[in-house]
Length: 321
Image 1 (cartoon, rainbow, N blue to C red):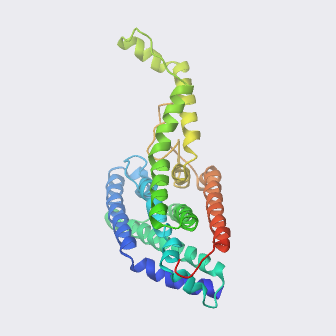
Image 2: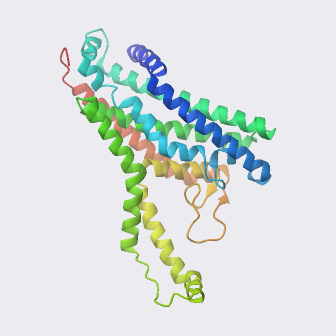
Image 3: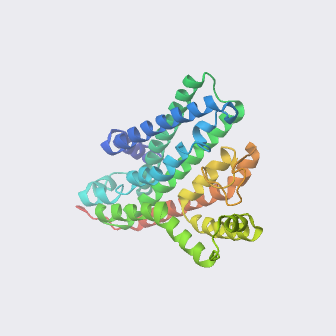
């Protein structure tokens, strides 16, 4: 354990001093501050929204959650994609292992350091967002809001830690950093963009919607209001949503919406049923609704880290790489 802490301190110092981390931290901080300002202005015009709307963006769109959905994979993967193979190539890893330190302490320390750096980024950003919103609104979160914000912060750290573990896995199974960064970029593109396109195509194929030749205004309006058409939309949306749940980003979005007290799909989405797109959830209801997504993200994290751990312990490391 002492060896892991030693490695963690060294790696954490490297992360906090790296240009990569500083640039990403600054980018997220600036965008999050703008999001908090926009959210606070919305709350001033709509007091019934409550303080939590600063983070949810449920009715004004731009939110911290949407930032993490898009940038979260980049942040997590960037701290892990070269954690092992970079030192292996340079020969510093073999020098480190020649010291009186257990091999598992190395990978444990690297993961702990990455998680600590991600936690610092998350807590600082959410804290600054809260401060900005409070200074504009003149009031702070209620006890219920504060509880939701804390749980949402923990969820975000878990989500970022998953991407860190995945980057660590790529760094362990590949010898070159160029290969691991390509794998990281491909994974980010697939889960952020490609999976959405695939889900829409599959849903359209499985539940095709054909419009009649008579496209007069009255006829179209009648079709759109019909129970049959709404059922087709519901089935199509259900298929699309289930396919997108392969993506950790989608799971995080769903879980974040539930914890922040919003029901009705992802944040910012208006369901096919029309009418009122969102309804408020009590804290316990939100936790219950988000538990499957949280469990799935946690399971993915464990699988990635355990795989990295086992592969690293079996890795043949020679002097000079």
